[in-house]
Each structure stands twice: as C-alpha cells, then as structure tokens.
Amino acid sequence: MRQVEELWKSRIAAYYSELRKYLRYMLNDHLLFVLVFGLGAALYYYSGWVKTLGETFPAPFIMAVFLGALLSWSPVYTFLMRADTVFLLPLEERMVPYFHKAIWTSFLSQSYLLIAALALFMPLYTQVRGGSMKVFFFWLLLLAIIKVWNLVVRWHVLKIQEKESRQIDWGVRLALNILLLYFVFSKAAVLFALAVAVVMAAYYLYFRKISRRMALKWETLVELEEKRMAAFYRMANLFTDVPHLRGTVKRRKWLDKLLGYIPFDPANTYTYLFRRTFVRMNEFFGLYVRLTVIAALIICFSGQAVLQLIIALLFIYLTGFQLLPMIRRHETKIWVSLYPVSPERKSASLLELIGRLLLLQAIIFGLAAWAGHSVSQGGIVVVAGIVFALFFAKMYAPARLRKMFR
Image (cartoon, rainbow, N blue to C red):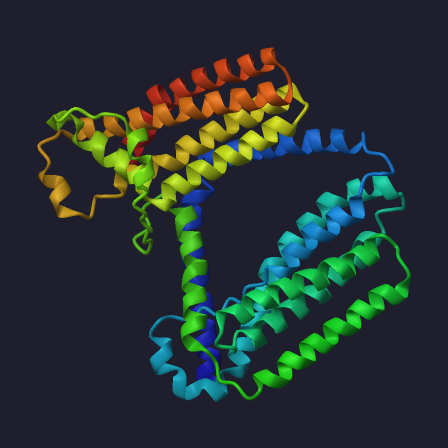
C-alpha cells in the first residue's frame, strides 16, 4: 500500500512539473494578450446579444446539449506509462487506491470547465426564463454529481475490451445527461428528472457489476493517456520545441495541384519542403482548416460589423502564429542539413508560405462577411485582413523566428 501511495505522489508530481515547464512558454507570450483581448471582445458582444433574446429562445435545450456534452467528455487521468503494462501488472489488485485518486483528480481538473460554462450560460438563462442567480450553486452541485457519475461509469466501461462498447457508452451517457439537464432547466415535472436519475443509477450498477469480473485493460489505459498527453504537447509545440511530440502524416494526393508549380532550383528547396509539410501533416493542415472554418462560420452568422473584423484579425494572427513552429519540424533529420541552401532562405520560404495562406484566409473571411452582412463589410474585412497578413508575414513573423533561434 505504501508503495502505491508513493507511486501516486511521484506520478502526480512529475505531471504537474511537466505542465509548469511548458506553461511558462505558453502563458508568457503575446498570444496571451491576444487571447485576453479576444475573450474580452467576445464577452462584450455576448452580453449585448443576450439582452436581445426573448422568451421563445430555447435556452434550456441549448444549455442541456452543451453542458451534457461537456459532462460526457470525462477522461480519467491515470498518468500511466508504457512500461507500467509490465512492471505494475503484478500489483493490479493493490492499485485500487491509485485509481480512486486518479478519478478524483480528473474530477477536480475538469470541474473548472463546468464552472466556467455554467457561469457563461446563467445570464442567458435569467434573460429568457427569469429568476435569480441563486440557483447557480444548486445547479453547480447537480453538475458535480453528474460529473462524478460520468467518470465512474467511464472507468468501469474501460475494462471492456471492445472499443465499440466505449463509443456506445459515450452516446448513452450523452443522451441521459442531456435529458436530465433539460428537465431540470426547463422546470419540468420532478417525476421526469427522477425517472432519468433512476435509469442513470441502474446504468451505473450494471457496469459496476460486470466490471468486477474483468481485469484492467492496461494497454487501453496507456494508449488513452498517451493520446491525452499528445494533445497537450501539440498545443505546447506552438510555443516551444516539444521532443515528445510525434505528428501524423497523410498523402493527400488530391491537393498536389494546389501546391503550384515550383521551379527546379536549389533556392526553392525549402519552398518545396514546407509546402509538402503543410499539406501532408495533420498538425498544420488540420489546424489551418479548423481555424479557417470556425472563424468563417462565426463571421458569417454574426451581424456585428466590428465583431466580424475583430474575429478575422484574431484568427489570422492565431493561424500565422501556430504555423511558425513548422520551421523546426525537420531539424532532427540529418539530411536536411546537407541542403546547399542558406538558413536565411529557409526562413524566407516559410514566411512566403505563411503569407500566402494568411492572404487566402483573409479572402475567405471577406467572403463570409459579405454573405453575413454586406458587400461593403466584406470589402473592409478583406482589405484589413490582407494588410494584417502582410504585416504579420513581413514584420512580426521574421522577428519571431529570430527570437526562436536565439
């Protein structure tokens, strides 16, 4: 028992040490200022939008769906490593206190998102349905109880070998979470909420019973933990080098024609390399597509001209900033250092690619503003986006790259 306790303490200490190491770079940068500015602008316009809502707005349903999905997302942070599948296997029966602590640590870590989400929705709910903010603490307690239920059920389901069982479990928990929250938020008859609560209790008891006969699936637990940490490392890699990160690659032959014709010349060596890197690596291509689509949808469905412009410039900055680490992607490959190309040309090739991508993004945002507002607003967004993209690629990004190589 004492060995298990010491193992937990060492693992949790190592985890938080790892977080602090990378958070120093992530929170001490211009990006933090931009995110705070963007969040402030979004909250300002959100408060103005809430005041325009009437009684017919489906606030309980929207809250139930969003918070239900957030509750259903309940990964258990086990902090296991690949070697544990061998060395900790004989201690499986003694690891029960370890995993209990893992569940409660996961609950505390994920509770901050619940508090923030509920606080965000409370002004919307009081505007539409009336009432006071006192109900916030009762609902927060309810969300905490449901969160514990989701985590415990998730832990029991992880003992089942079939991956499909985990997917079905997520769907069932999502449906139950949404139903219970909707009945509570819409102030439906208490019997409806009690009926869902009884089903949830029976669902938990069923998996608790069948999981007692099953052993831990160590490979599954380690795989899930590695995926969770990889997501954090991908985010940290936007700010500094992360040796643990391993990117995934896809051929994407259908995008070859979009790369454009590149003359066969030593000066274009890195031009070819970075274009291929962007197209084939999910880390960069997926990020660019996600940010572009999200920003375009927000701009299109926003009726506020100032908000459209702020979102466009903010996402152009975020996209360009997160493409800069591409310059370090091939540093560990020895044959890249054999290229007969100067380091200055390497930076110039990346900046040229980033500039083109940001200009394309500015045009897409302008079209979205045109579709959602007016032709003149679309023109303003395009012009401002192009100017900002050129400023980023010609002035900000070069200084940022020099700082990265100091």
